[in-house]
Length: 104
Image (cartoon, rainbow, N blue to C red; front, side, top):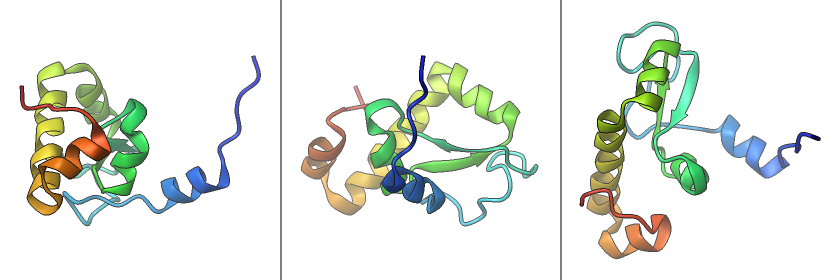
């Protein structure tokens, strides 16, 4: 199959990724090794919203795999994102933007 090219808008958003959890995007959030990836904590249909609101963590390959494969850890971070967002923007805005509740 043919690979889709990224839009200029998406490429620009990815280039400007930031994190509401840390200012250091060069080193892994968990172990301080050099980061391999910027991991969006809310993926899938909410990946762009995750980028937009800073729900991104710099991670090394080991911790990226842990975030991807550990369901409890993944849920913990989704709940953390939800809590932080609601504190700033409110509950209704959370549901308007992300359309999910990770607290139940």
